[in-house]
Length: 287
Image 1 (cartoon, rainbow, N blue to C red):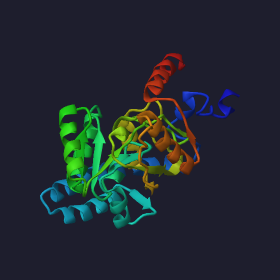
Image 2 (spheres, helix red, strand yellow):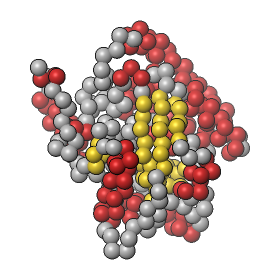
Image 3 (cartoon, rainbow, N blue to C red):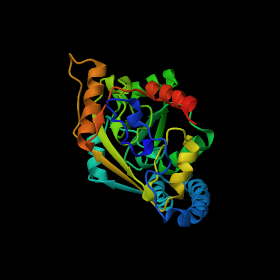
């Protein structure tokens, strides 16, 4: 009887932003497909390494084309209402704040024009290596937010020469389950640069949950690679600028609310730390 209860609302409990199960609903086709999916994941990993190494020394324009082809091989499809030219004009010299929906978010972001991905270290080594290969293949850039000195230097250069660069960040700092957003951190959003909210959705077949509460990043990544396809929907919203009297956190809340409103989900006050605390407590009480 307990299993039939509806999930808690994200606004009432952090549990509403976390999903325990790997599969959201039963599907009779899943057991038939999964053996094929395991082989497919292996072939995709091999293709990723080979294409990335081949593309590495090639001109940027050629790498960009090959990267799009590689995403197709990996089964990652990108749906966007804007053209590449429109995205470049909208995001040039701006911070692009995206909700965090899965471990493959960076792969879709790197396909965007002028993309510079801002993230901290601490990823699983395998995923970090994968991201490094795709970074080189795509021609995108990466800023390590944990390296404060290098980050400050890069930010100074951006303010001096903003053309051709768009800083992509996920202010939630953790992955939500699509029912609501964790509270955005002010961080990069309060550095005096215009902010473009990016509302993302991930559509997966067979009821796969993108990031179950107790799954590792590596397990989640491999499961996505097993799927026949994964659709990343990316919607760029109107550019926002922080008002002079507005605090950094108030502006971050405004950006969060704008994305949540577009997606039709809750904008909550729960944080990454709340999620980690809930995960630890849930491990202790699990049967």
